[in-house]
Each structure stands twice: as structure tokens, then as C-alpha cells.
Length: 183
Image (cartoon, rainbow, N blue to C red; front, side):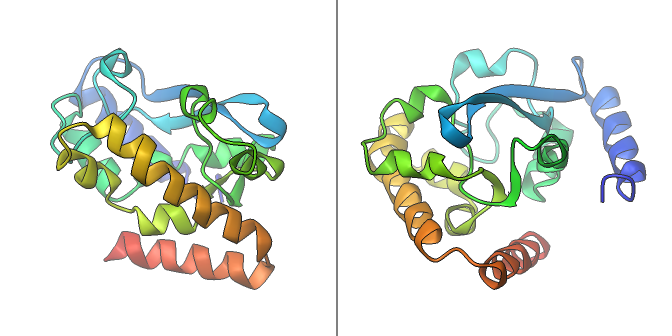
């Protein structure tokens, strides 16, 4: 899949370089299987050092997002470099999305079970919260909304996924993710 996508990776890389200063890729430490940290890879969609202003992206027009970044995020193309994470064994195609340590530290004992399986590029929570940044933009306190409302619901969806995990279920999630991106 990575070899097939080399032309797409190349075009996106050139666009990012022409659009704004900074590197092509963004990496961030996430917590994965067995609570082990790993670096997740994405195409850079924000201005350099933007994560110092906050880990959450609020709204589609967050002023930290570049012009290219807006398009890449809208169509989830910024996530394509995570195929390297799959190749490296840090992630799978389907599974609970990996989180940053700051938020994992807030998980209760039951919620930590999501770290008993390999994290994925997509999951039911990603589909349910496909436009999460827009929800956060409507909040007067986005971080509080994420911690108290969105994150617990995502974790509940992930725990249900773990209980009912199957090959056909994973194919269903992949198919629905592709349809969501196209629509």
C-alpha cells in the first residue's frame, strides 16, 4: 500500500513545502500497546511549534492550521504516514486511536484496557467523532469538553470494539471510514 501511495506522498510533500515553512512530517509521542510510548507520524498540517499552544485542534479554521493542512485534515490525508507506524508494528489499520500521555494519565483502570491491544488508524470512535474539532470549537472550554465528555465516550466505544473484535467488523470499520472521507 505504501509503495502504491508513493506518488500521493510525493505530491503532498511538495505541497506542504510550498505552503509553509517547516518539515513535511509531524511526529508526536503517543501511548500504545502495553502502555508503551511510540512516535506517531502524520503529514504536518500546522505551523511549526503549534502544539505548544495546545494539543487539541479547535474548529476547521484553527489559525495554526496551514492552507494545505486544512485540505489534508478535511480528507484525513494527514493520517497516511501512519501506514509507516503499521509497518513498524506500532499500530494496526483498525483499533483504538492512540492518545497522548497527558490524556492517558486520566484513564481509569477499566479504560486502560484499550491499551491491551494495538492502536489503530481508524475505529468506531473516529467515525463517531469524525468532526471532533468542530464540536470542540463550539465549546467555551474545549479541553474540559474533551476530557469530560468526548474522551469517555470514545473510550466506551473502544471498549465495546475490544469485546466484539472480528475480522469482518474491522473490514466494516475500514469501509465506513472510506465512505465517511469520500462524503
